[in-house]
Amino acid sequence: MVEIQSLTEQIQILVNQISILVIMGLIGFIAGKTRYLPDNSGSVLSRTVIKLTAPLLIFITLAGRNFSRDILINGMLIFLLGAVFIMLSFVVGHFTGKILGLKGAAENVFKMHFMFGNVIYLAFPLLRSLYGDGILIYAVFYNLANDAILWTLGIFLVNRHNKVSVKDNLKHLINANTIAFASGLVIMLIKSNFKDFIDSIPFIYNIGGFVSSAFTPIGEATVPLSMLFIGLILSETKISSGKDLLKRYPIFILSLFKLILIPCVALFLLSFVDFVDPLVKSVIILQLSMPCATIVPALAEQYGSDYRLATENVFITTILGIVTMPFVVYLLTLAG
Image (tube, rainbow, N blue to C red; front, side, top):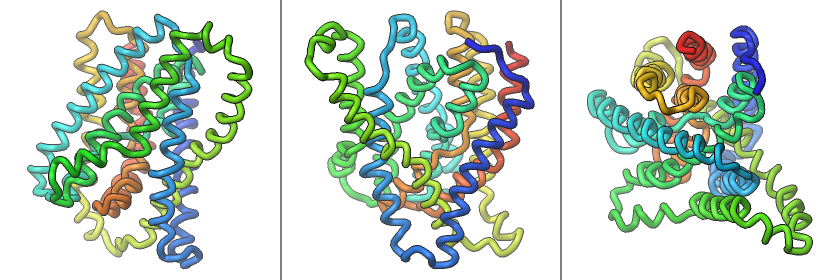
């Protein structure tokens, strides 16, 4: 484990990561404004992410991991506590949306972004900078909790506005992403518990290497393609005055809760739990403080939900995250 870097270095890493996201989105924005890409490009990109790159990213993330007993114990704590706080965020988002008078697709997207943050592209580099490469194994466990809820409850929410039956909504839970999640989890468990048997299979590692080399670059295209999609959608968003911006006040309320209040509440509650390793607490709190997930707009477009609101959520929380994420890191430093 490496020493914690200075706050200045942490801020630099955050700014670098956010700048890369912004540039990716700007490319999509310019392509949309200039009509460089066809009108249906956003739809094609969102379907590519949801049906192809995201499932492969989920699969390779899980299937490529090996876990020791100690890592599994702490990892399961992160998984369980992460799931608890994600669901707590859902409850807070539910009542906040009701108070704000949101309805239908907008309300469901609002709840989703209360729960799901950019836990890979922003959180992983930050955690690595703070605690070294070894921490990424723990970060994967939080990502498991995030993805397990995203591809179940999240899919249910993003399709709920269509007013179809519960049975039809449940059918959407069986999709490429949940299949990839289950398949990757099975392979991870087999690798962890039957290593000697796997080693005895001829050419198994050669075959696995070829598959990984093919799947990995496609899966890693998820974030860039998501940001291009967001840029394309933002190019159609009209904000001509401060009044237009004020009309989007629910997004700023979402930002307040997601980026500051919920992580601070988690920090306060976890301070009373002595049996949990401080490293476990830090992983959970930092992941909770991430800006809105970039994949939600693509999901919203795929299921005919309010993808414009989802896009604006990502854009505004990502910009505000430049200030709030270093603040959360500072609070963690004070808490020891």
